[in-house]
Length: 616
Image (cartoon, rainbow, N blue to C red):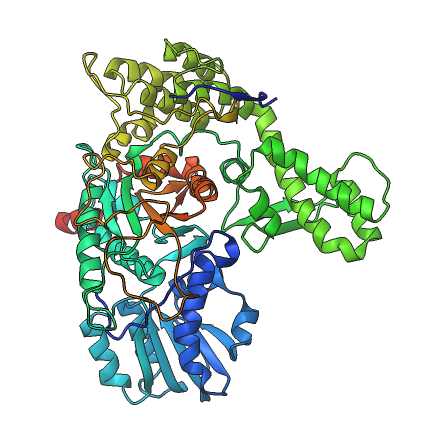
């Protein structure tokens, strides 16, 4: 079905008095970004309040609610004597005998809501205030003016990013795509500034002062802009360390690249479990909803608390479909259950008979159901699409023969009754494979797909620096890819995201400095193997606290795909001594990316308001 495994050929500002944190290198979820963030919150917010034995209220805004939900459970908070968690923006009853911890973003909306809790009458005995980032002076002075006598602590803890997985972060801002790439954008500079501030807080949380590099490209200018902003802000943030010495660069690199660098990966149908599920199934907020055999509605969270999800998420669907029934058989064998084909209804019967194994079986039922859902989609449509997509993306067929006429590969897809979005994806892969097409040819393709009214979903890729319409004489140099001809892969999964080449080249110190210039000085003798820098480093107090290895942080402007997230884990697993962390403003699915692209033509709402007023 998937083709056998075969060898194939494939061409801010610091707050002063910062407490130093030494972070050990780790690759598993138990020691990943989420754990580092929770540890940092405990060391600052919780530690300050721990001296008091009184039970406390924790008050959060929308961002910090999501931040805390991503890295801890209510039971974790209860064990730290936090008994109630409240929404900053909702009306709350006063509890005058209790202390309140405010963890919030430094925005006018959050500060106004905080002030309203103490003016004219206080809701709580006192306030411990923690901002995710630097609080602007005007907001800080307003707080002092109205609430000074109630505030016991006010700190900026530098944590305005979202730990999405152990090696993945986001800036929790899907709107950044529109703000940066829309030709009508009115807040591009402000958005890039905010992303730079958020990246500074990521580096501060990891205790890294990385060398910043960006992908140089004449058609993509925002990577350089963001690199300049970030390097300047890091320089100011790390101007002085605890011993009043300028902090030296650490053994880390931070690479900035734009979405247009690899338009193929987020558009292809991926057949690894996580990427495939998010592409084909409607999974919102990491929640998979499904119907059990008795017809009742069920839901399951797909996150790193589910160790089976962690084990399976980057595996090919063929392996997942094989492994889950095996796991269930192992459980049933241990309880001397009769052999037979593993189905959802069999599992329901087993759970009734074996209540002690209910949790293990429930977990496996969820993944058996999800894998089955993926396979239904695959069998119906995706399998036929994948061969054409892979040939267009890779530029050769399964036997390594070059695709001489990509249009012949595309035409069967256009003639088959696939969904409009599936056809658009195939058309885009064709255009990417030939580095842009003529206006006449594009019009024919658009008529074939019947998207005359939605042509922006193809044309707007030019805003990302991706060639869409070119003249027949246009020649584009094809980027050099790493030779993966000796790697084993499935016939329908031959494409490797371009970012994996970048990760491996960076770790091996092979990135061309002309294509990947450093924004300022580079850390001396950096290589991904964790070799000791020739520079003097701030010494940690104990041997145990010293971090070994190095970090490579990748930031993609315009969103990352699940296949690119997978690459960070694969490279880390291979190299061991270098942890790769990848992040973006947000995470993309193929459909959400096409929606973003289509929306780039829309004019901002403010413009319409101004126009309406001017007509009066």
